[in-house]
Length: 388
Image 1 (cartoon, helix red, strand yellow):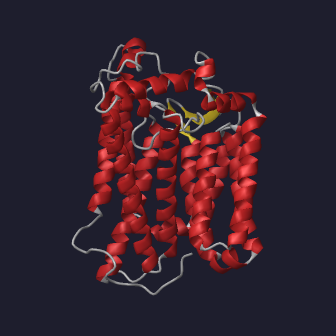
Image 2 (cartoon, one colour):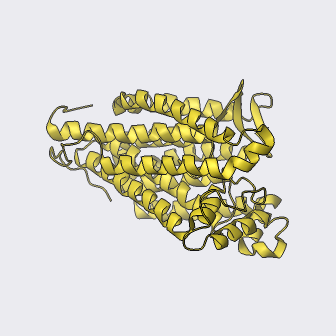
Image 3 (cartoon, helix red, strand yellow):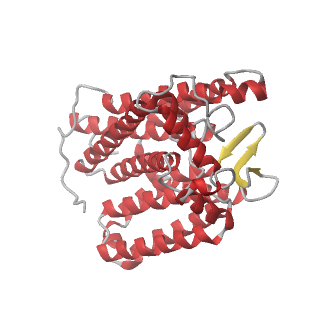
C-alpha cells in the first residue's frame, strides 16, 4: 500500500537529464527489434514484394513517426494529460465503437481491430491501452480516499473497465483485454485498494476471463493446443509446434543471425507475434537472456521513475509511470510465454521488437511519457519546479 509522503527534493540524481539505464534498455530493445524484423521477414518480403527489406523499411519509417510524436510528448507537461484524461477516454470510446462499424473498421484475419485512413491503418487497441492508463491514473488521484475506503469509489472505474473490455472483445481482441485488465488491477493494488475489494475483483475477473475463453470454439481450440500442441500439430497446434521447433534448434547460442529455417514459411507471423521464436532460433538461449534482461532493466527503471514521482507527492505521474511499465512488461511476458508454449496463443506483439506500425508508434509515445516524468522528477529534485 502506498502512503502519501512529503516531497523529497534530492530523491533523484541531478547530474543527468534522463535516466541513462532506462534509455539504454529501450534503445537496446529497438535495435534488436529492427535487426530481428529484418531477419524474420526477409523471405516473406522477397516473395510478396520482391524487396527483401520491405518490412524493415516500413518499420524504420514507423519508428521515425514514433520519434516525432515522442518529441512532442516529451515537451508536454504531465499536467496536460491529467487535465484532459476524461476527454481522451471519450475519444478512445468513440474510436473503439467506430472500428466495429463495417466500412470504417478493417477486417484482418477475422478480427476488426484497425481503422482505415487511406493507406494508414490505426490499431485502436494499442491506443486504448495508453488512454485507459491516463484516465485511471487521473481517477485514482481524484478519488484517492473513496477508492481505498468506499465500495462505490472502487466500482466506478470497474464499470469503465468493463465497457472497454466489452468493446475489445467485440473486435475480438482477447490479448489486449487481458493486458489492460491486468494493468488496471496492478494500478489499483498500488493505489492501496482494500484487500477485500481486490480479492473480489480477482475472482470476478478470473471467472469472466475463463468463461470468455471457453465461450468461443476458436478459443477452446487454442487452449487445447496450448495444453498439448502435438496432439494436432498440423491444425490447432501448428503455430506453437513450429515455435517450439525454433526454440529447440536454437540451443545455447543459436544457429546464427539470418540462418533461421522456421521463418521460411513454416512459422506463421514470424515477424510479428512469433518473432521471439525466430530470435530464440537464431540467437539461442543467450539471446533470450539478453532480451529478458533488457525488459527486466526497463521494468526496474520504470518503477524507479514512478517511485521517485511518488516520493515527490506527484501521484498522477507516479500512477502513469507504474501503469505504463506494467503494461509493457505484462505484454512482453505474455508474448514470450505464448512463443515458448507456457501460455495459450494470443495475438499480442512483443513491445519494441515485433513488426507493427501502431504498436511501435504508441510504444515510442509511452517511453516519451516516462522520460518526461523522469525529467520532471529531476526538476523537482533541483528545486527548478515546485508544481506541475
